[in-house]
Image 1: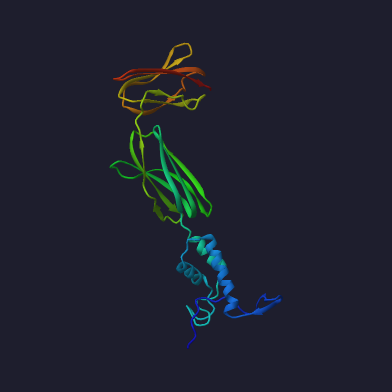
Image 2: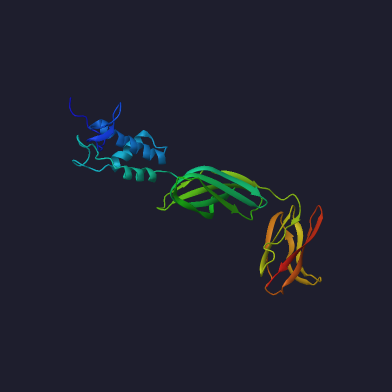
Length: 283
């Protein structure tokens, strides 16, 4: 019977080990080389436990150091095992494993949250969105964490959306430009059920701030700014507004520091809504 070609070789000459009953002795051959191979297998599986036996064999043989003729030979196989290079290749084969991806709406915003179990060469995530019967388009990008075997948590807020159904997916991008798409998740931004006027943000401010309001039906809306003594300082909105959530930016560059009142008056088919709030301009 001819010599069976080995897959790889490992140091196996005069390997020292304990004896049954005490003491130490040296031994060689396959029994001496096997612990090196088993140790390397345990090492690469500890960092990438999802590897198949075929992938483990490929990693060990691909990273082995040739000792004889090019390619496999009957003495050294693919070569002497190299635990460090095998470790690096196993690490490079760790995918970006997405363990969760959720979308939740709040008012006219959608909060996206996702978690990865592992990452390799992960540059980041492009957030893609589409409305019903539309096409996916990019709405943002979140930086990744390169290479890691630790759990990573990410979030992104898609703001100021019209009521309707939305679909989201992630395009995970590696540093070399390769990419992979996640599964699609869906959520709905509901139309407001009532009129509202929110506190401006930021407050105090200098010189710009944002005022948010909502109307549940088509309404004739007026938003005005008054000084603390009741003088009209600015009119921000005057006209018909569609049902939904709305934001307006107020630039107070031309005004002096002080406390101001902003007022909404919305006249809809079902009712008239009036509300006032204070804001502070600090220059």
